[in-house]
Image 1 (spheres, helix red, strand yellow):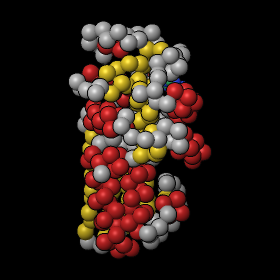
Image 2 (cartoon, helix red, strand yellow):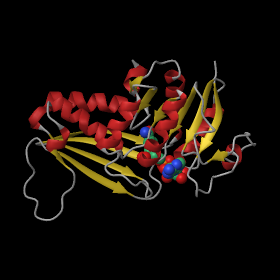
Image 3 (cartoon, helix red, strand yellow):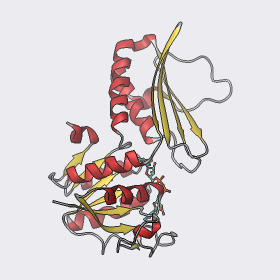
Length: 266
Ligand code: NAD
């Protein structure tokens, strides 16, 4: 059976990659595309936006006409846009795959509450490599404990608006779990000026922004005389888009609930 997909944030970098990823698969069909009212994509055909043949789906300014039960909304937009979309998703009984990052704790709670009514899968990063990186970082933290100083370094393109990236935070949570501590109580989010010597057990973050970097993450375990680095480099955002479409096909078969990529991968 073909998975019916509606893309929220269809005019964006990820939205367009998702439209391309849907068009690559025989078992997925684009049924809707939505972007903000004043966006340059509004009213345009999704195929033409990608430089392909017309797909017969134009970008609308609201989910209301675009979704019904059985449709999976794939969202890569912005936190406010995601939260505004939830009533329509809940009212229609559609499902939701979301990769939008930078949600506040309140927004995350609102998203999780909506999962009582509909299936929702959220991932800060849809690449399988990052799932593995998190497992490795957690295991390294468990084994090395206080003998290593952990630093998480991430780099992204100049247009990214949230920092550290959702993936860096997710890796940080994995490291914290390996150390048996809470991330928020042990993170050094930035350093500037006379900050003093590094504290034992701290998890430091460094953020690089520039050019067209798709996404790079390193978990650095620095010890005396040696260091271990676990690095993931994304060179093509299609890996995220294909992962999200795969997640949509899986989510279409699930009951209401809040899911992660790890649930899908078993
Ligand atoms: P982008 O700025 O290129 O695209 C965002 C799109 O959302 C734009 O077209 C914008 O007009 C649209 N939008 C904004 N507000 C809207 C609203 N109220 N209603 C409808 N559409 C709205 O950004 P991007 O690089 O495509 O990233 C989008 C999000 O996805 C970011 O949060 C980013 O961090 C995240 N992301 C996640 C992953 C992952 O694997 N989870 C990978 C890459 C990016």
